[in-house]
Image 1 (cartoon, rainbow, N blue to C red):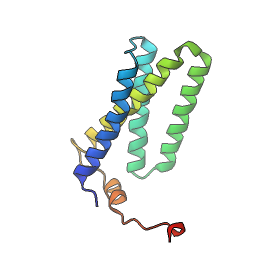
Image 2: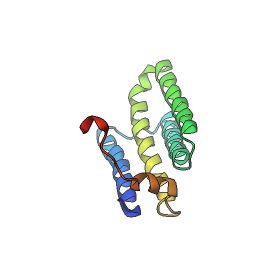
Image 3: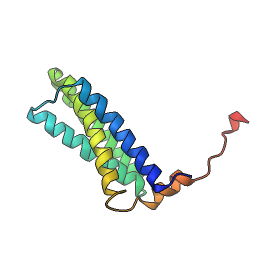
Length: 129
């Protein structure tokens, strides 16, 4: 059964796994749309995590769908920024995961719903029996 420290370590590792390779492969884009895209993806990721951990998974799916649609639309309408959008997507996801887990894990307690989900006993699926 994972403890709260294990949940923190796992989420911070996931965030860093998104962030570090992205920063090593892409140069930092300083154009206004890239900063806006990173901020939007980070905010969307934080909102999705918040909704999932506080009992609103359908609303989280709606946020994901809107974020995906906006990313595809912007990339399709302006093809030269496609590589920058890829950068913005991965950095935004990383910052969203790290930011959310910092707020709900370091500053505030991890939601009970997440702890209960992680500590629920696992059963072997029927096709393995």
